[in-house]
Amino acid sequence: MEHCGSRRGRVLLRGPLLVSTVTLVASLGGFLFGADIVLVALALPYMSRGGSDPVEGINTSLNQSLVVGVAKLMAVVGVFFGLTVANSYGRIAALWSAAIGYVLGPATLSVAENMGEIMVGRVLIGVSIGMSAVVVPMYVAEMSSNVDRGKNVATYELLLACGTCFAAASDALLRPEWRKMMLVVIPFAVLLFLLSMFLLVESPRYLLEQDRKEDAKEVLKRLLLNKKVINDDDEHFNSSLMRSYNVGERGGFSSSSNSHSSSNKGVSVSSYESYAMDQSISVQERKDAELERLAEIELNQIVRTLDQQNLGGGGGRGQSEEGNNNNMFEHAKRIVAKIKSLRSNANAFEATKILIALAAFNQLSGSTAVINYAPRLLAGGQGSQFDSVAHSTSFAISITITKLLGVAVGVYFVDCHSDDDEREEERTEEPPEGGEENKKFYGGRVSLLFYGGIAASLSLFFAAFGVVGHEYLVLIGLCLFTFFFSCSWAPVFWVLVSESFENEHKSAAITVCVASLFFFGAVADFYFLPFIEWNEGVALTFAGAIQLWGAIFAKRNLKETSGKSLKTISESYGLRST
Image 1 (cartoon, helix red, strand yellow):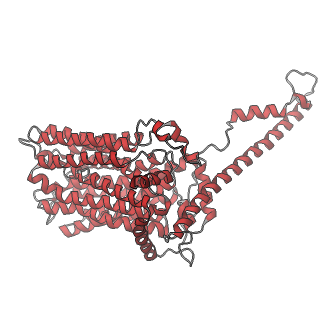
Image 2 (spheres, helix red, strand yellow):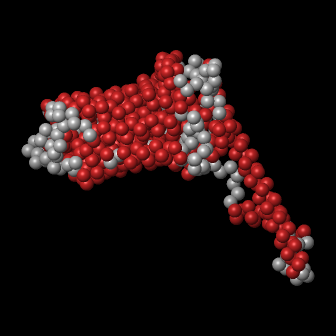
């Protein structure tokens, strides 16, 4: 079987184009996740009794909560399964597996006739959601530099927002044919599979774990073309080349001399062209040598972290005494062992606890439940004339556009930091003590979580007030909440998960944090619909209070991480614990 890192049949992209392609193709998993959230929310009224094509058993709010929430619950399983596949067969193979689930799940839903068949389709989709959620941030972070890591990882959330917009547009075109709505995401799942096969390259970290050092170095060299190895644009090179050749002193062609015959001029020009070619080859050789040197440095850094991981009992290069081991059961046991070992490292354990708390605030504030049950929220206002079926498309378009705008703002500001931090990647020494106090951040992770969280909580309080006022106040409040949450908590959580751990503990910690996010998301999906049917105003006030608590928690427990190395970020959590 051919390895995922093989070149056969692949388009050999390099430099910024390779990094951008990796980010966009891998983040298609987020697009499919976002489309699923909105499609199911918009299809529920058509599935239930009184809809155009009802499904047996989907009548009560409890059953509808199960249909929505089971995907998040199975995403917890998908997180562990995705990491196991990624460690056994590679990051690209894990993306393939997720894409297959995104095909089978919607296909099952489109032909379902009862509650049980609906649940099967939702289970398949949930596993794929969990797989892509853990593999995409890990893979993108491994392929990105410190400076671009935040924006690249946050692209997952941006594509998720694009998926919600696509789902709303699909509903507008296909309603009330909910079975056809389920099928619109399948072409994108197939696209994820095909583009992963032909455009993506395997992570250098995984290749080193499989003792494929030369393949890993080749990938690093292609990634490092993102940096300017030798500063010589064509104009500078040609002018310096002409000066070094010094035509006049060598007795060749000179514009001020008329004593040379045309034949001599031809000889001189030919010798200059030959000299230029030799110098061009020399420059290219120097660039290749510098690229080789930088790739070797990056390679050695990864090797050191893998060796530390191996000494810690987490598995390293070669995976076992037998060498390359793709046994999924063995990898699953290692993941469990790594999770247990988190307690032995103060930095990783403290970071894991904080991010689990952030996952709880992220989901229990109703971030996705608001989208899932949006039509019900508007229809529940006092004196509301809103029809949850007839006007669901209008609301979906409003909410998804605000989400897309919010994520775009968040992606821009998530990596905003002082100019000094932009050189962090090139530093080998630690910054001087007390240097952080002199830096002026105009964005970054903590600011977005704090100010965005406060704005999101106030928006929920406003929506709760609208319940006793007018449905349009509820609509405005929910749109504002979606915007502020999407430009802060939605992208920042994935960025923090991808960067808060050194490689020794990264896989185990990411598994726990992402699984926690989906667990709390399932809890929110299960309780939110019965809650809003009991008292919508109280439900929105409760969600706003949780969001406000989360903003204060983030401000008190996190330090800014934008532009910093993984080692510096990890150590900042350890300092907090002491």
